[in-house]
Image (cartoon, rainbow, N blue to C red; front, side):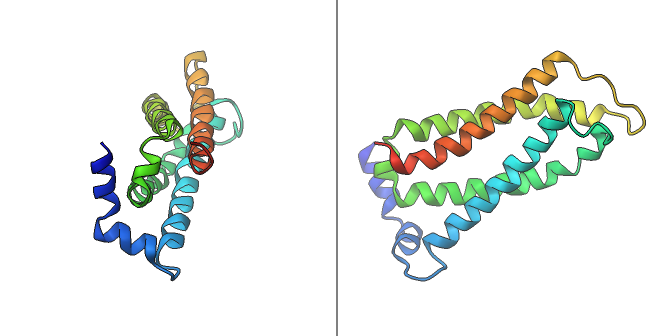
Length: 159
């Protein structure tokens, strides 16, 4: 595994970004990753909070457009996350916190499916009572996205 991590770090794109002294290197990738987090976790939080009863005047169907922002942010995060990992694979690849982040991310994505189904099935004229199962998933989604962000930040500070 060590040789694979070193191989990743030695790819030209990894070296170019990691060794760049301009704003187009590591700083740009990190900024884009942060924007991606906002575009991903933000809409997920808004949808979850709405399912928990906040913002009741807004029908669930009004949240459909948030999925576009979510997926744009997710794709941006996937690309920049891979680049960030490649630049420090031999350190990050052995950190349990990195794998905790990936697990939280996977579980957060799994909560999105039933949330999407509830939002897509909502009529703009009728606000159905949200089931307790869906409220539990919405709360879990909030916790998991907080876990993704927190564990992601802690990667730099853990061994």
